[in-house]
Amino acid sequence: MKFRFIFSAAFIAAALTTMAQTHVEGREYYKADQLHNAKELLVRNLHNAGTDKAVSNYYLGLIALEEGNVAAAATHFNEGIAANPQYGYNYVGLGACDLRNGDKSGAEKQFKVAKGLAKKDAELLIDIARAYYDTDPVAYTKEIDKYVNDARKANMQEADIYLFEGDRKKDNKDVGGAAAQYEMAANYNPDATEAYVKYANLFTQVNPQYAIDMLNKLLQINPNSALAQRELANAYYNAQKFSEAANEYGKYVKNPNHFKQDEDRYAFLLFYGGDYKAGYDYSTQLLKENPNNFTAQRYQFMNAAQDKEMANQLLPMAEALVAAHKANPANKFAPIDYILIAEELNTAKRPQEAEALLQEAINDNPDNATFYKQLAMTYVGENNLSKAADTFQGYIQHSEKPGYNDFIQQATFAYYAGVENQKEHPDVANKYYDMALEYADKGHEILPENYKPIKFRGDVAKQKAPESEVASAAVPYYTEAITLIEKSENPSRYVNDAKEMYNYMGNYYLEQKDVPSAKQYFTKVLELDPNNEPYRKFVEGLK
Image (cartoon, rainbow, N blue to C red; front, side, top):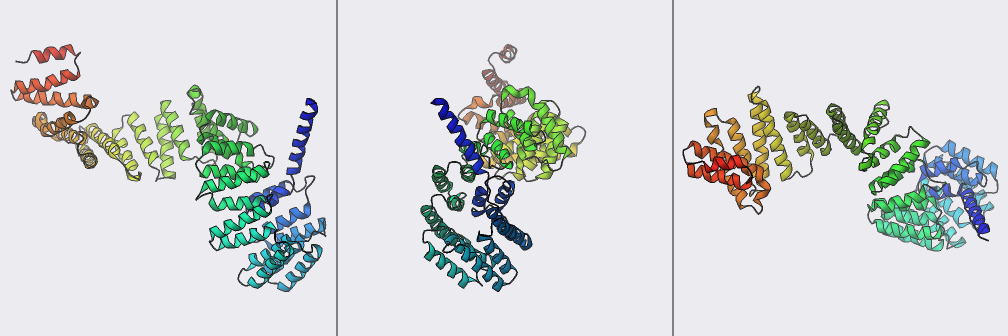
């Protein structure tokens, strides 16, 4: 019995798979206004067993009309008629072609043939209304209203009536009215996948939860709908629920009617959902199927970069990505690729390559502040503080709202760039010192009680002073900065800066022969560094 149950379940699953690969889901995608996806499915499954070629050609013809190719549309409609001359919808299609060509009389003849083959078919009558609407909704208002009324008389509960009315309201920016019509379509025909999807699409950006709820209703009715699975995953993505989106995409990519390009998005969602192991494994699987899949290659690396155990494998992946990127202009990097690869090159002590990559990133996207920051830190690693200061300025200029730490970081880079240039290029050094003061002042405006901006003034004063005044140039600034440190809630946080300033002040007073004041400052250093015995002996020896 157990074996028979398993066999039956497998047989049913196989049957469902076979049944799914026909014209049905292509029609669903068309009715949900996803023409590109509809076309791919209709063409993909055109010659499969179970596909109704009359239906497939009808929808391929409608797509050709949407693309503005009336001749190709007519070819599809005629092929549909050849496949089944009793299927009236292709005559509706030929009538739509006549309308596009300005032949209203010819269109009416085709519509008459269509109605004769499908008497009181409300859906067909709505398709005629759509043919007029898509040609000119104003000029053919009378004809449109007539066919909608005829459809209502034929079958008031036909879902396509409400889908059409919903589309008209949506075109007139009446979102609430459109939603009500789509909901009515779903109520009259719970299997009308496109009704749920159109309703969801109204809200997926502004209120994703409405979309999620509606699509979950659809999947309760039709759990095998690839369209529903895909749209639900996208709704979760728009709600920034990446784990849920990845879960739904995981179901969708197993559906035989999924789109190949969506496999890459699944890898993307696994990464942003934080499931790095699954993201790495899935990307690796895609690469086995197609070693030239650049997107899968990117996500394999991105996911691996989050796993400390894979640290030794990252550099070859990064090198392969850069090679593929350079070999084909179509292989474009996203910001995260530049950042992660540059980090790996820096870890490998190859800063010049990291710099070249980040400069490319800046050239491609000059408004991305993160690139400037990463490049500045790369220059710091090479002890090139001048380039670091110049580049970090780009980070601040492109940051939406730079803060205190950003300004102090830039003041630091600029100060040391000044020190770096002082001997050989004093004019350049002064430029950087002025830059350091400018950004220190910006930081002071934000946190006037913080000592650091005041200390920078003292630091710069020492560097710019004549040699005879270096020992006293920073005194007023360091005195103020020390007061701010000692007034702060946690002075021990600033131990290194405090020791530096205490020492400077102690030496200043020692030169002034003011030993008590000097000893006072040196003692403060000792309090911060109590195990420094040589220093202790020095302080105790002061008389």
